[in-house]
Image (cartoon, rainbow over all chains, first blue to last red; front, side):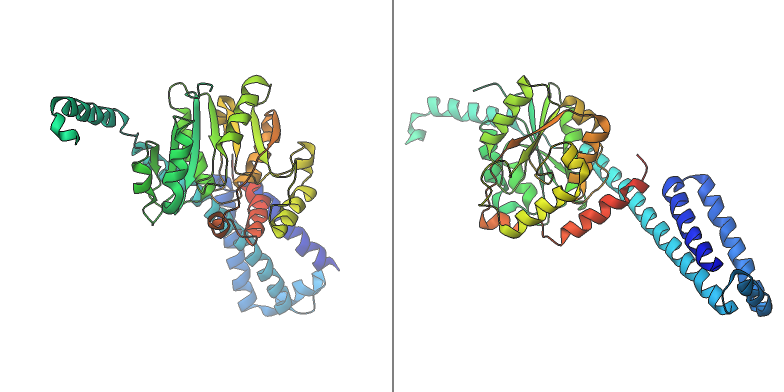
Length: 133
Length: 229
């Protein structure tokens, strides 16, 4: 059936598209346009369910509601991947930020101090033999 | 003993207060330069490290082992005279003698990175389930077979400045091991492996990464192509 082909193609295209371009301005604009189209379609579906049913018949689905359900599944999958990738990206930035702070506050070992203390103690020992007992 | 002042040990630390001081002190006898990256521990690991003579870099929050290694390497590669780098576990699993041997090879043979392996000699001391899982990972990874690596998830690695400069671990969690393998094949680092001994103490067993984590590693690795660079 035509609908199966369309749905699978939509999933694949969105997946490839997003994996390749995610994070760029172009994609962000694409998402917004897609969202607008989705809204328009939703309004049409609410006002003229018959049209959706006609469209459904045209692509080989029984009813308009079924078509909406399928479209919703695709949109949901798309949204999930998008969110996942966004989280990964954020995590990476967060890590870089934390790393920058960590490197700035790095503590080198107080080796020089330790040597100085040792030196002072050694001097004290030689100056004050009673101390060594 | 060879002068190891051009070597930096990078030790990612997460809640290892019990053992970290001993591990670091022991390693310091051979390697003067150690940087411990405290990955947001809540058990006083940082204080334990402070007394030892190792450098301390502290993540303000917990990020994961991959992120800690990256931080440590970035710190170490900026240090004057740093030429060789070692990733070394904080729980005492790794042997200093193994590191010395790997470094000798790195200095004398034409390799950029040497990875430790548990599977070249007798591996009967490795817990059975762990052995099966680790071998399965290798069996299903064409990349590992191509590079002739038998144990990609070994935390003990020795590498030179070129690798340190190019190292960019973006997977914060445990997926970094496979990411390093990817980088080895993508950037053409010359790689080999060296038989090392892993001490499976009761402590390290209780801390070791669970096998369920393997699922996370696979998932992260599969999807990481999506993130840039």
